[in-house]
Image (cartoon, rainbow, N blue to C red):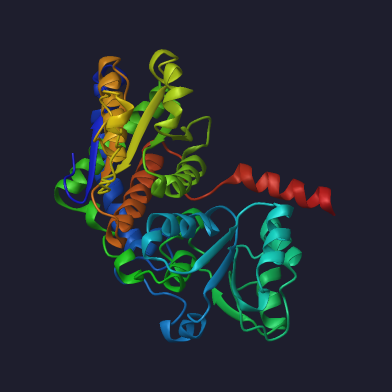
Length: 405
């Protein structure tokens, strides 16, 4: 268990684990950590994004001219936008601007946006690593925002032969290079997440302040315990479903970021978890029966934030009702539901992990991003899959382009 403003507990019962396999995985862990530390120091490796010496492909002074915009629209798909959405929802109490996210093909959303907003007063961030992402290009052209010398567009893509980079040169638009060695799902702490965060008013130095915390001391021991046990579960094929139980709305977009990270990094060679987000306590009334009494092929990650809200349920005296909910805060009701679920998981010997966030601030989100990146890469290496590619996805992209040609 890790104790700080982020508390992580593991409760994975011995019956799901193979001790001999765990010993082998533990020995491999040390070699993997040494290799990862070298990768973090290598400016051509994905994990360099976690380095204290990581250098952005932009200067803050060049972005200051965009701070005047009160409305921002971010256009992207997958790893190009999920991180920005996670930052926005987790830290929205600090954000004073209006933020739109175009992360799917939704004609009604585009139509309503064009009717509601003066597009000249909106700052558009168009993000695609490849520069050729079909949905991103489709939304950009559907919004009809590309104009010569536009001062309200930022393009982030690789600097190579792709449509977005070509557009930035042809129309003289503000351009930031996407590092070619950082894949989308690992890019949240690079230009891809930092530029939207900065323009939202978030402190991006604090957002990158805890990246290597889990590679030392007790934190590394916890990382070892978690990664080896999860790899053990995947190798045994006893558990193949991962359910994120989300008890705080501020964390939902972060969990969608986690979903992509885990699914694309581990889902190879007939291995991997199927990660799904479950909204709680709402899903207590639809899925809990299956969770507790259905197939024992799932591990649960329980996420919550300490809610300081003091608003209480007040049952008026004139109603003449004596109910246990009276004088209870909504946060206390939710906490009781979560704790009751934890008791049931223990009673039914269902494996779970719990992530408790004590405070909402940039440093905590930094820990969450870096922890899951490190853990996922380690698990991938332990189960012998490449954590950085997504070959099956590329096949579908090629077929889509062929069908549209």
